[in-house]
Length: 111
Image (cartoon, rainbow, N blue to C red; front, side):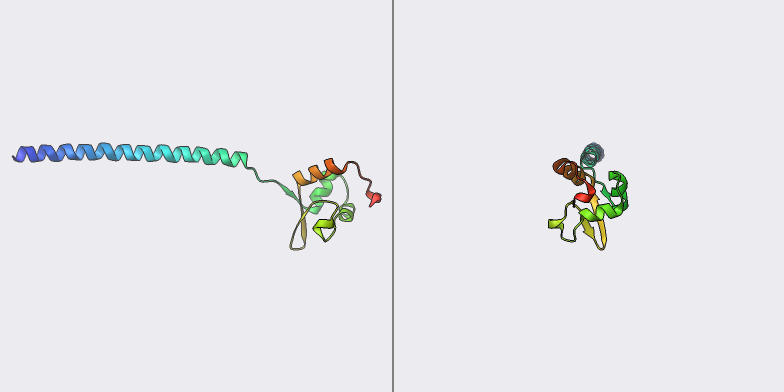
């Protein structure tokens, strides 16, 4: 009787170890897949760079004063798309490129 109890205990322990190992392995595989998915999501959703006034001047090859001619305090009336955070102006590269494509060549003295 005592031998049967020991054998049953050992068998139960072995089953518990196998099930525990399987659960741990499954969890590690899921976390590895989740990390791969997060990495691929980060690569596809890149942040859009924002330029400061001086960086935009370098990007467009014009001075800050010339850029200010296109910027109005009212975003809806501004000639150039921008974001204003505090007292600073920031410009999205994609929005600037789209604006340049839509407006075509513009002379600075035109406005």
